[in-house]
Image (cartoon, rainbow over all chains, first blue to last red; front, side):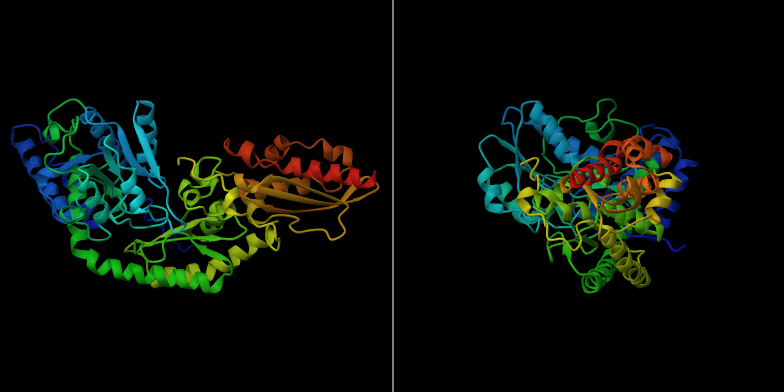
Length: 401
Length: 122
């Protein structure tokens, strides 16, 4: 059976060149980079080389890169490390209702520790009102945390403008950048961010490695206590092979992004147009333009997301959904709810996230298989051909607002 | 995550549709939790002659709906009344634990349809 992977926002395959670069660091270059002897020295250079590769991709100094184990660690470090370091200054955090759980759950934890958190709502396109953001800043505000792009919709937030607001009020600015780094150009100098989180497995490096950009002069408490690694900012023996892989993946992204992004966008647009033309009553979730080139999130009225995914899977198509069943809770995606997407449509939300390996044939195959799947599920649905449509106020929205 | 039997009933659901001259109809679930099941009965001489279903929901919701129609057909109303959600899940060789409460409602829908039939008759 044909297998098509369109879930690149969940994870990506390790690029062959990345794996090749990593392999020697499991065997002949096995040393601990903290050791002074030959075995350690050989490896230390590789870590610093990787640091430079990451720094080059996002335009910062290598000294501003701290290696971590994953995106969630980076977000935890950014939030908790800031709250700890700035507790004399204030206790107020501003974030959004559509952040990744790594930020939302950490904020909820910090609320229990005495922080106050403002969760900014989004409009129906999933975008923020920057005046509202500015108005939320108080003299107790110590951190603004806004993701660079949303993992479910692909919406890209105006990070440069938010950074300018943060600078104006001298508030620290953190961004969860895991969905953008390696996909679209990001520039830490232009963006005015103080903290930015990267996850290796979103850009062709392996799982288990990430990085956080910490702007020079940004005071943080240590996240992991122990050894002196990462200039005392993050203890723990380096995941050498993973770090080498992350560096290599950043280097490759630097070279290929310019060509990959428009090609992926063309495929995504073809898929979007094809779906809209072939299937009635489909809703686009997210902003029509201010979106990552690879992400398409749509809801097919009257049918549920998990049953769509299972049908896809039977045809070899890997995608994802914001339905309750796939979110692991009884409620559909918090992002769909925050956007006031009708509750049935939220359960139906289906995300295709493309990557550099996808082809024209992949899109053609999906466009051929999708309409009968949707029709079959609609024929089975008691909501189809039924006027009992749900309105937005029935949505138990804004759980966190 | 699903058993072969669940996948069989999900991919080839039995008795999908509506019965135009149904004399018992039951509906359970709601949109907010993502599952709605509707069961149509054709009852003659206290025996379920025909059952059909329409379901909005996940794989488990569709499979349990399909299974309950198979289990109910040909049974007397009293026999069908005794069918439980657990028995439906068991007939499917089990459901993932997180699905037992949210999507395992098909017997409830059947019971609603039987209740509706009895009310119509009374």
